[in-house]
Length: 268
Image (cartoon, rainbow, N blue to C red; front, side, top):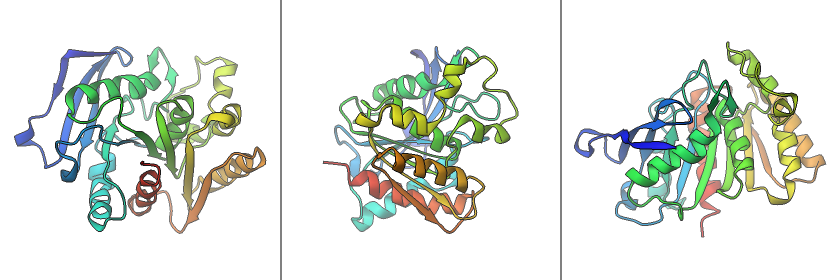
């Protein structure tokens, strides 16, 4: 839950055009988390604005998708070309625990509720036009790709569609990238729940629309191929694509456009 009296918002005349920055006091983080929000000019003064939650990877922050990848620039270009319908970007920090939180509950912190409850509560309060009626999508890269699929499936009543890039697909994939032990306090059943294929199969009758992709030179390529094969074997509808590229920013800048096109196709 957000303590709105102890949360702050950037001043409009001091921030880049279209951007708002939030610092939210969260009970689930037992402290503050940060969020970048980008609303394209064409959506100013609009109501029920569709929004895309973009989740960053390990070592990243709320600025990563914009000031490291340039997702807002890709979004604006596609809107200007008439290739997609306009939508806003909501880009939260993962909660800033260790090298990466994984976007799930551990060590007494609820990073899942931070994203799916607190971030949205803060955005609804501070950002005019984005509300509970707005269509919500979720996407991410690497650890954020895991987070997008994990949270998108678990909160399938909230998210219309899921898209992921270069994704961690299970807790086993995450271990080499995070120095801290995220699992040390988890039960066996909780660990089993941190596998995207198993989670998707469990909820296969009510999944949001799903796509994911991976670079041909990415160390996570085989894990993504295995996930794809398991989903095919379980007869779960999805789209999986492979493209030239590695686990790097130029790949994500190029293929976040595929995410925006996919989400635009799910707007009424």
